[in-house]
Image 1 (cartoon, helix red, strand yellow):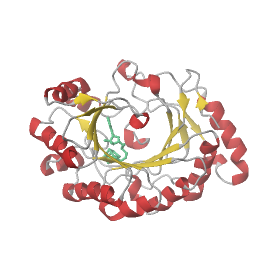
Image 2 (cartoon, helix red, strand yellow):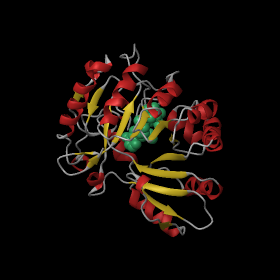
Image 3 (cartoon, helix red, strand yellow):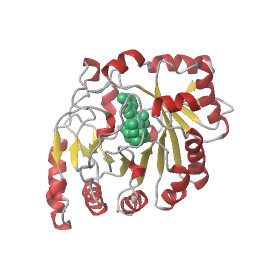
Image 4 (tube, protein in one colour):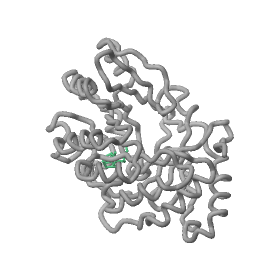
Length: 326
Ligand code: SAM
Ligand code: SF4
């Protein structure tokens, strides 16, 4: 079947699903105090996740990414991956992780059908990494990235949030990583959220700065590929990997949006920065509800907004990205 189109003619076929709102890191721009104490609002179960993904697959969604919070805090993350990759019509299953457990589970994830892995790693300097995340295990996360490549996960990317104190030496360390490994390293502009306004104003670094840095180091723009998503990629001869830039503040960024999100408790979000949530969980209790689920998703997508309006400072509805998965 064809894919769904929204009111602006965009083809929507990509589901980003948060499987938990819990996280074991304290990234300075996301959860500087760590995640809220107290019991977690029960996240979707394996069965609910499978029913949800089946509903989306019936509407032509062929790509699902698992995110969080930190998705690997769920002991059943490999089973979730397997259950989604087995659904007819789903061609890609991705995972975005802080990499904390990766070295130990990379090969199980690959065996479960994971096709794309994004590891968030903002610094290759152990002290700066610990300051940014509250985690002192940089070495094991780097080992996890290499284990994922060795396990044969088809696409492995590293996400680096651009921050003012990224120094030349560190930038060159990241670029050097792409010399011999087929990694995609993506530099992402920091986004303002409801909670990080003061941090954002002090630390935001534009993707344009990074583009000039790449240009001055001999990196050139690569032809666009279908799997590039919102990133613009650069390459350099002698490097097997590539470098991407994601610039959400650039005009026209939302024109190619192809995704919707579902929170860990089963609420549909049409835009990362859209406040409205459409509850789906009540339609995930039995497979006999699948037709109703499909109808609700289909009718909701018509209301997907044209743009996130971040440029106008419209960010209050999203307190932090851990709440919906980034
Ligand atoms: N815990 C997992 C991780 O860190 O990969 C998945 C969830 S995290 C919210 C997903 C991505 O959002 C990470 O790459 C993180 O760096 C990014 N992120 C979080 N807050 C952000 C912000 N304010 N601006 C830009 N990216 C952000
Ligand atoms: Fe946790 Fe990811 Fe947010 Fe860092 S960016 S605090 S790892 S959810």
